[in-house]
Image (cartoon, rainbow, N blue to C red; front, side):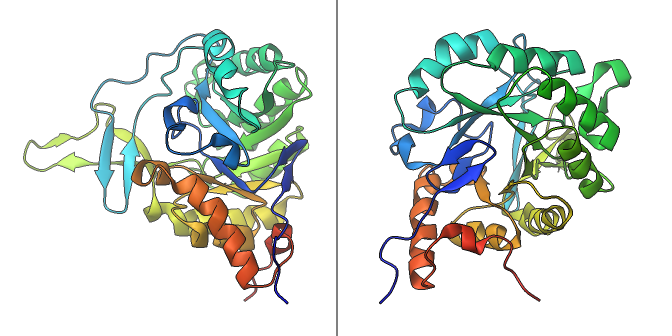
Length: 307
């Protein structure tokens, strides 16, 4: 007899997720923007738009470009700041039975630490996803996540300010992502998420100008999936903390591949733009896969790929 109802719940740090599906920060707004498509409680967690201490204006337009099998974005982490998140955005999400993960961004280590302290104990916040792909203005705009030392400094500062689950979001635009992953874990990160977008650009041959006002942007979508999958596999071999895998996940088959590579949970990003129902459909698709393979627990998938 086959499995009638496989166990779908996973745990990321102290975050109890009813299933392994969340959504990538910046692709789902603050939840309310997507709530007309399906019940947000169907998701394992919701990661909201990147949040800074003070409002950020973002980059000039144009700042998105469609690419073959993906997209470039140079939004510039536009947001209204942490006070607006707490007072205006989170109250709406509290009506849903879903953990909320806040993606945090900053121009200095102190800004990350301020956010951790400000969000500690806020009702409805289950964890922080530390975006270390931001430029450190005090260090010549070197991206925090480009060195193990930079990543560790940010994570350590946040760890000192909160007991919330810390998930460090890793950049693929580095020489050795495993070294940075290990540094983040050693500094106190409870989990990791990867990958963030790959740096790219696009040019209009008719105007002979860059298509993005910012010149460069983050490449996401199916085009990056093979790279993301390889990096998730590599990092899963290097550290012993939960991993949220992301990068070109469009359907349940993609999600299962990431879990086989070592991801404990997955995050849907660009897929939300192509199909607003993607998150809910992937939850159901993973469950259907487990039934078809006679697997009783989704956690049994994690890291079981073989050569």
